[in-house]
Length: 442
Image (cartoon, rainbow, N blue to C red):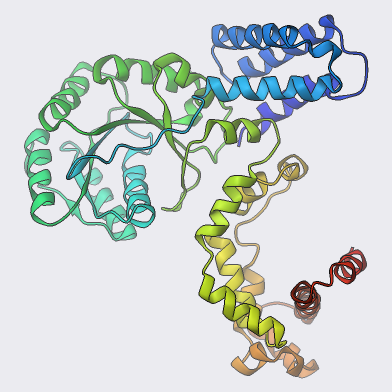
């Protein structure tokens, strides 16, 4: 996410991060490089220039040159201003209606239909709501079918009226259906076009006027950069929408849309799409995004994702097993499944400070655990609960059954043994022994 921009900003701020002499001249030169990095990321030149002017003014006003750690203070100023440029505080979604009506808008290909499903899934699981998805694209039969497929994936009902060519009537009927069937959120997926046209704008404006939604959201493909910002401006002039959804942030995104869009339309980015899976949706936190852009990671989001998968009762059971030395491969497999639910490995690594930069050229496959899972599934239930039973002949059978080698089976057994010992030490508070063990593993 924003790898190129992160590298260029890091390079621009490198001089000031060091311990060399900080002068007004190299502060100006640094900010010139920062501006260039932003423009290269497809941020509008005027916005980039205003950004660096504000940072420079604040830097000289706070006497950065004479500060004890001028480089760190300068990075903080850039981070704070970047946060402000992207919106300052996170904006929640308005769910005040009964039902709450959310109108989705955007061009065709922006990921609007898929994100409607993601939002429904998010509201169902995180906010314990009962959403209803509504198919109001009367032009493409494939769009209605796609929404039904998405609805099935997330376990959310889809309302459609094939043959009806009036999206306003469909939307009204859907809201009536929601009231009758206990749906407290209605998400209306509207028609998109390949480009902005008058007919499209009139139609969605008519839908909005007829149903008076609590939220009108504009969905935009973040990979289109400055074009995304221009499209948002055109939509906002007609719809006066409430917030922006940025999709495909896991792709080769330069960052221009995320950084510029709030400044241009003065509407907050509310959610971001971070992958293809239906749970790959995050609330947009400007401060956390600024941290990631500057290579500082996003530990808060990482912890939040871990907490979502945390089950207190399961943790207590696991604790007892570790204490009794009964931690087996079934427990290990369960822990792997919890990690996988947290998101893509590359995205998770990007949240760890410094890890994103170190691993930027490393292809982190989301299927990295597949061979481990295959090995474990090739064990008998008895072998999984008592790994000490696994001898040479069993290793050969397990390797053959999992399509791996005996060496790979041995490697997993060794890693499992070391991890079990460390977990046992952590239970007993043996911090020093654990550190020694970790050094021995290097």
